[in-house]
Image (cartoon, rainbow, N blue to C red; front, side, top):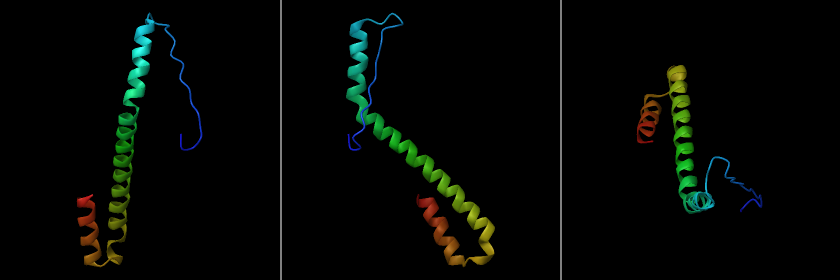
Length: 82
């Protein structure tokens, strides 16, 4: 709605679904759409964090000789906290 983009879903009873079953599926979709979006956002955030941690660990390993011990310690604490 924020982007002004419209999407539609056509649910057709091709596999023996009754109209009532299709209506229930659509109602469940609408009812749980917000929860589904929140769950998706959480999964996306966890994935991004995992990638960021991996990249940061690789950076620490490759550049350890250029970093101060305090920088390494602070970064490891931040990773642990995250």
